[in-house]
Image (cartoon, rainbow, N blue to C red; front, side, top):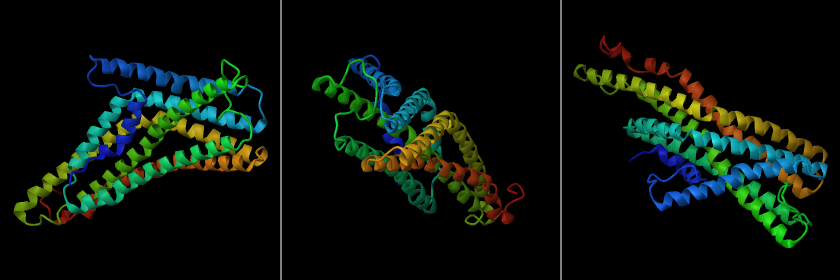
Length: 336
């Protein structure tokens, strides 16, 4: 069975392509011109205009509970755009990460390792991806329900517009359309940004465990004298695997450090805002449900990253114990 970790990041690459930062390889034909125009429009609206629209909306006259919501959404929107810009500038590093994952995938050779890959890496990555999809769907549903049953003509989120959307139905439809398009692409940015880190750390953690299993198994299969060279060769290949893991960690660190800093900063601000609004200002039951969902979503966004960040660090620290779990006592002097 062929294993390819790059399949786990297919949705991220598809999202980035739709968001206009993965250009076609052939830059000489009309498709590239169309894609460039698409990229300019999408990023002008989602990456720049929506955050500006929400930022200026904070200063408009509005109830106190709505102002907390406005600040929280504005912080999220600005952080989303900044993270997206960082990822756009790091796509070559993401490709380098994929090359290293493919090297490590090629080392999975026996049934035990394949079973571990399927049971732990594959399933956990699928769960992470499903969790993020469910989070964004639930938040989207609660926002939509709160909007529909609000009982008044209003926007999804408070924001500044160069025209008075209350003046006519045409202006109102234009304002709602602008917010729907912008919010859709920002949700897509958020999904691509936030799901990338925990999936990458989960796969990294799994490959560290696979290397531990590989090293610990040395000497138990090839015990006879004429097969000792195989053990030595396997040990050398495991050392190369470890070097690839260290390189992978360095590449991942260069990709995710600033996005994760922004993620933690935005999540902290938003959780504080949501809690204050929920406890002191919000009275409508649908808005209460929305803030509870929003608070839970903020927690769940950072939980997988924290978990797998700690997990791979612990596994790296105990990796050297795998050598002493191997059958090294029967090895040659050179092996020892």
